[in-house]
Amino acid sequence: MKTITLYIVDDYLLTRIAHKRYFEHDDNYKILGDFQTAEECLDAMKKNEADIILMDIELPEMNGIEATKIIKDTYPKTKVIMFTSYENEERVLASLACGACGYVLKNTEEQELKKIIKMVTSGEFWMDLEIAKTAFASIPAPNIKDLENLYENRRLKNSLTDRELEVLRLLIEGKTNSQIAKEIIVSTNTAKAHVGNILMKLSVEDRVQAAVKAVRANLF
Image (cartoon, rainbow, N blue to C red):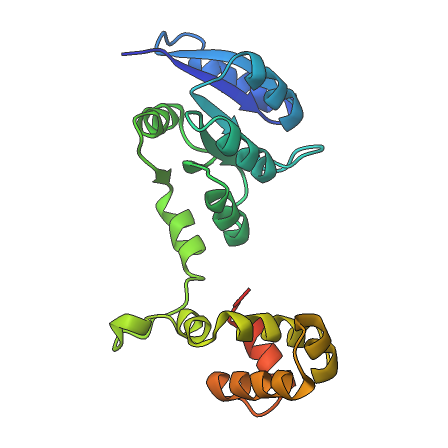
């Protein structure tokens, strides 16, 4: 088995020491370095890329989620595992959206952590079941009777033309028909017609309701 190289990023020194002891007597793993900040880790990656980075979320300057995005964009072969005490669903989802390949709590036992690292190194994804339940509880319920429109948000967006989406964005910003017309270089009557079509397609009665529905549906 190829030796797995690791960086550890955590702002608490004793935590880093404890984590390093997990691996120091195991020839299957090699700690290339440990860092208090994400910036230090990013600097180290320029010289020596690691296979795995155990990344905390709460860090002194750049947070771990932002650092994960940079690492995945710059070093696609490196796998980032969020190694944290936080089970907040927004942080879990944000970590995954930014490219984390695993989300592990710090109270995970040593042998389990090593198993997870091996899995992630081989291309698998890992998340604690309870964390997954918490994170994915925020997924909206689908319209299971319509396979083409399982999620209304997508249906709403697909029902609008590119021009109507542009007008809707301006409408959300509170612009009047004349201001919209000036922005997209059309007549006021044309802008008014676009707004009318938007209200009809969103099944709302006025501009305020349209703006609220668009924001709630996360159309942008």
